[in-house]
Length: 69
Image: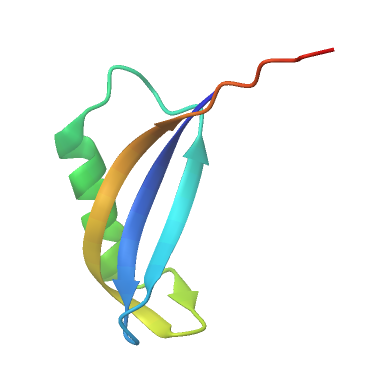
C-alpha cells in the first residue's frame, strides 16, 4: 500500500508528518508542493511544538506485507 507523507517543521524545529493513504498516481510534484504551501499559509494544522513553519519533504512510502501463514 502506498501513502504520501508530507513533512513539515514546526516552530520548535521538530518534524511533523501528515500521511495520506492511497495517493493519486502519477504523482504530481507541483500539486504536492502547492498543497503543502496552502497548508502552511492557511495555518490549518498545529502541533505540540507550535504551528507549522516550513516544508521539509514529501515522500511516497510503499509498504508491502507478505503473509507467512
